[in-house]
Image (tube, helix red, strand yellow):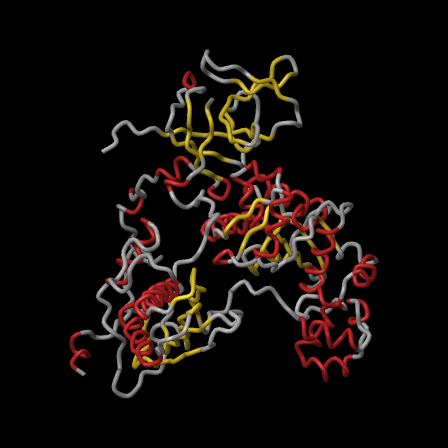
Length: 139
Length: 423
């Protein structure tokens, strides 16, 4: 029975704060802002968003480097000039989607790598890359 | 008219495996149960090769080699995450929804005003596939039972394109009932199937036309409701508030048979931790705990034993320390040496919300919360299950599950996210 004294049951008391519609609103209420949330900033459709790690140099001139973290939104329908994840020979591959004179290409952005012409139906676009994230300090 | 849809993911586990491993799209895929025991999911190609549901792995080894079937251990971290995404997309599209299982969801489309429901379902299907990578089928009916039946046919028929709407095509209902074996009707289990077939009832159509009195007498009010639902009268509404669970369990088959007491002890302690975490996650407390251990019932010639014991808590709890202490007392009481133990489980019973249990005369209040459990849960939520644990069990032992072909946790662990080639 000692613990009864040590730890009284919680009593829910109504607190009259700024939630009450009557009375004067606090002048600070209008200025309260949430903390900045990177998820909110980078991800518009959480159910359709996946993370993929970049491996290789073929998109260097687009600013995507080996080891970068890519944010993929599958809810965006791919359009020409989007950077996309495509399925090529059973692998996930990052390229820029191009349409030149009616012909689709998966274009690398590095002179050392070729662009690949693709048919409308023989290549699946897995998702559109919306963001790449690179760490500059590893510790 | 009431309008229910059942959305069901096609070959869900196999589809999840294929999402991040496109190479698997060119091969038949099977997914195995815990401990890589038997087949619990198959891609269409594997079904066509004759791999049966529940087939033990050792029986299909030849088929696997002959047809280059990809064999995956079950990866519930992946399936759970993808399921949540599918349910989010469905829930955001329909007026209300009920998650029925990891890969099935009922929608209430009563108040949905669209010119063509079939077109709407096709769009929903396309959106789900596009956003989450998972193909689904949609069955629509005036009752949940008919929606489920329509879904099965939508999946089977190439013509349907994954959608079958019986609400706006009532003339199709009879044909659909005739095409459905009675054993495939929602809620008709194996025992009832045998009983019905013995009495000449083979299809859903024959079942729907059975006399009420007869059904009620043989199958009770539950069976009668199923018959009424087949006739188009709603007996089951959407349950968007899942009823809180009465019991929860963590049980596993060991990776190998174990004789050693300390090994079984470690397994049991680890399950206690897991099951306690489960009730805390549900915001519940348990009034009692039960432990069981048993040998492999399929091991021929080996002595068989099944032991169990239980304990009641003075005050309902979800604290790992109290639960594991109780499990330890039961374990020491029931333990018998000399058997090859193969499975153990910890059940928490008599679950309730904290505070709603009638206080006993002397224990007026619940245990003081020192915050340790929620701290552990938060650490494990952030850094992965098992990061912070009580020092109850060794981390690895023979009781650990066998998962030889486990795919990475593509969506739930930073070190496991897929790589894309930039070559």
